[in-house]
Structure formats: C-alpha cells, structure tokens
Amino acid sequence: MNQKNYQYLSDSMEKMGFGNVLNNALKTKLELGFDEFELKAKTRFGTDVVQYDLKFQKGKSPDVEEHYLFLNRVKTTLTKQNGKTMTQEFPLFKQNDYTKEQMYNMLENRPIYKIFRKDGEKIGRWVKLDFNNKDENGNASIRPYYDNVTNFSLEREIGKLNLYFANRQEKEDMIRDLQNGELVAVSIRTKGKNEDAYVSVAPQIGGLILFNSEMKEVKRTDCSNVELVPDDSLKISSPTPKNTETKEQQLPEATKQLMEKANTPGIKEGQQAKRKIS
Image 1 (cartoon, rainbow, N blue to C red):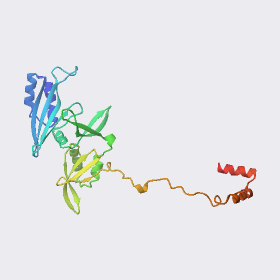
Image 2 (cartoon, rainbow, N blue to C red; image 1 turned 120 degrees about the vertical axis):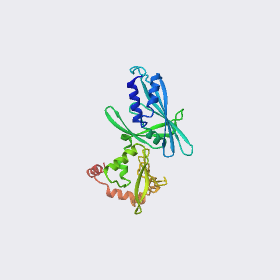
Image 3 (cartoon, one colour; image 1 turned 45 degrees about the vertical axis):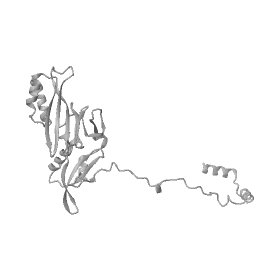
Image 4 (cartoon, one colour; image 1 turned 180 degrees about the horizontal axis):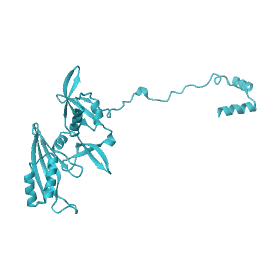
C-alpha cells in the first residue's frame, strides 16, 4: 500500500466532513490494489437521510505515481421524510471540492460560496444546482455566479434586513453559515415584537430571501429583478401638424404684392439679412 496515497485520501475525506469512519475500508481497498472503487457513507440532517457514494479512481496523468488514486466524484442521494429522493453526482478536482454539508445544502436548492485562484488572483463565486438543466445522466448543471459579474455583496444585503448582532463575531458567523449554504435562523423586529425568521442566499436575484417561521417568503433584499412598466402617458409622439401660416400669409395675393414692393430692402441690407439667417 502506498502510505502517502492513503494519507492524502484520508485527509481529503476528513476535510469533507467524513472524519475517519471510512479509513479502515480505504486502507483495505488500497492494500488489495484496486484501480478504482467506491466507499459508502450515510448521515442525517434532521429528518433527511443522505447517502454518499465516494468514487476513487487511479490517476491517468503520466506524471502521477503508479497506483496513486484520487477521490474524483461523490454521488449524493437525498431521501426526504416522505420518501422522495433526488440524486446528484458532484465532480471533485483541484480548487473544486465540497463538504458533505455543502452537497446536502445544494440538493436542498441552496447555493454555496467558493473562492479559487486564477493567474494569482482570488475570484469568488456562488454555485447553485440548476434543476431545470440536466445532463443525460440526470445530473443538474452547476451554475456559477461570479462576484465580478453580479456585483453581489452578501454583507451589503445583510445590512438591508436591519438585523441585530450582539457583536461582530455573531455577524461573521452568519456570513460563514450562509456561504456554506445554510438556512440561517434570525430574529426580526416586526410591529414592536421579535419574530423568528430564516435567511437564505439567492445569487440568481442578487439578494437574500427572508422566510417566516412557516417558511413562507416575506421579503427580498434585491432590486435587480425589478423592471420599469412602460407608461403610455409618457410616450413622445409627433404633434399633429397645425396651420403655421401667419396672418400676412393668409392675405389676398394682390395685397401681398403691394406689401413686398414697399418692404423690398436694398442690396447691402439684403446681404446682411442673409448672413443673419445663415
């Protein structure tokens, strides 16, 4: 068994929240020399049951050590209390991993926040499952919402809810939980009394959604989905042509000719008139 490989995979599973419960099974698989294998784990979130099928596979790159395996994918199946199930396979690779809680939260249609490096620069993005777009295997597409594109600020949107925080740490804890995809319980002041509520991030609308204790939406903090309804009364239309003739233009033709003779300017005077007009 490659001890270095075992330690690497063991550390990866612990980072994902599986602890060391799969370590003995992992060691056995590595000792037997499998090129690929699965390990299964199960946990509960309230009344929800989630099973994780961790899929390990030998590295295919020529610069990878012989029989060096990686944890490439996690098939996650959520079973609700009513028996309804949904499954998603999460790909894992460099700068793209998930904890078991994050995979559960994404199946619950909540986004999580990730930071990766590109050309030495840190780039943040929210990722969310798009259940309306699935591949041939039934996996929902993973849709990203980049900070530098959406201009979405979690801290700014939290400020719009007028929540009370005992200290800065309490606010930072809330930010961390929301970034992890959690539905965060809060207390809001409504009509002179405190009421329990829940907050969830909605990057697709650029804001937060506030739910009451019955999980009914009561408020959104964004305005990015608001559009102007055209007002017909403000439309600029061409005015109806009016009769623009002056009183002089409406005079009989004979009278016009007499007036022109009396008012004809000299040559110099006429040139000045042209300069003024031009």
